[in-house]
Length: 301
Ligand code: 13P
Ligand code: SF4
Image 1: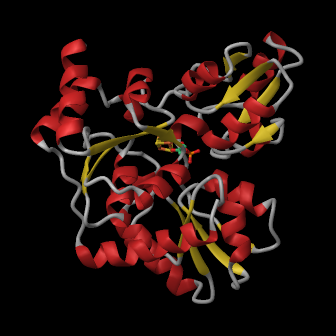
Image 2: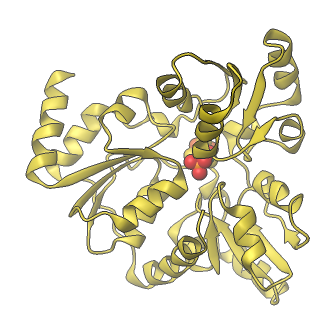
């Protein structure tokens, strides 16, 4: 392990690199990263950074978004097999058909999507700004993809007509109302904080719903001492580190995203040493996807 840490430090310095990691990454990866955050915070960071080289530890769509926003920088993806299954549930052809069917609708695409799908969209959103983005648009009808649970969360908070897509996060969607009831029995008088990718019936019972950064903020500011966490287990690392006196329990043992756990110290060291794997995106697609991501960043979080 120390050998990998030394290698990372050496090449990071030599190559003026910065390491970004999502809140779901393995504990060690979070600890070596320069910035750890949610999807929105990390895309903002990627757009602002002055470093020549970004190493993105997350899943493919996140490294891709960094490259879309920073085309002149080298973005390295240490684990190209880390793919978000939900992002694969939306394809360009089907989206074009839906757009043809609803020509008046705006297309709002969750960042958990491929660059090609972003390129077909008016604006992107993350779980932290989805409602704000939808509300900011002049159109009454919104095609919202790919997450049906996030779409439903937005639908309940806006008067717009939301057209759903049949996509979901296998990790968050696996949590059931039964899991929630069991957790409540085990830990009574504990606040439940959940990610909007969870099912509607789970969200209906939550005390707070928000992105990973939203959950971190809520737990930090709340006077409660104990929380049940309805999102991927990786978030527990920061929650515990930032709130050592508070208690955190995972809502379900199924809350693990295998793809997020594929990145290892060894892979990060190898990426920095060999400058691999560079994220490359077709320039036509990149330009169109950048418009949708920039539109989101302008509206904000
Ligand atoms: P956040 O935007 O909350 O970081 O979530 C990203 C994600 O992949 C959730 O499953
Ligand atoms: Fe995708 Fe779900 Fe993993 Fe997030 S937790 S990266 S939505 S599969």
